[in-house]
Length: 118
Image 1 (cartoon, rainbow, N blue to C red):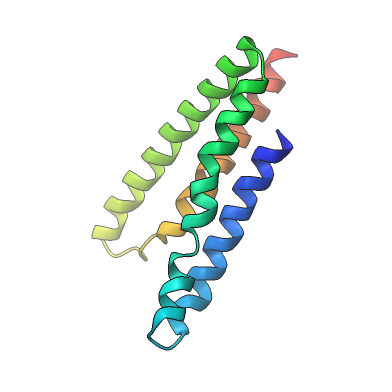
Image 2: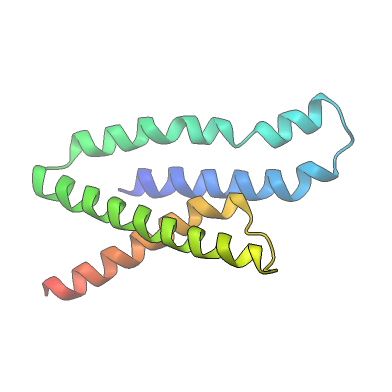
């Protein structure tokens, strides 16, 4: 599980750095490479996810998939509501924040589930 957390953290860090400093670079291939750099850790995420799911037993796999489904639902609901809020003048939601939002949702769901199963 630590490999999975490290992969998501690496993706989040690269994405934030790329979209914080990339737009300020002069136009050219360096700027394009900086703005496209989150694709590399994003491409590695499925590999890490599949390796993690291959290692865990059926019960843990079911719990993890349920957590991911609930986290996707929470992220969708938040982004949908925020998207409606953008129509009434809220600040635009940064697209790079969706993956960390889903990760935090998954973590919160796991904490709640662990507390309920005690």
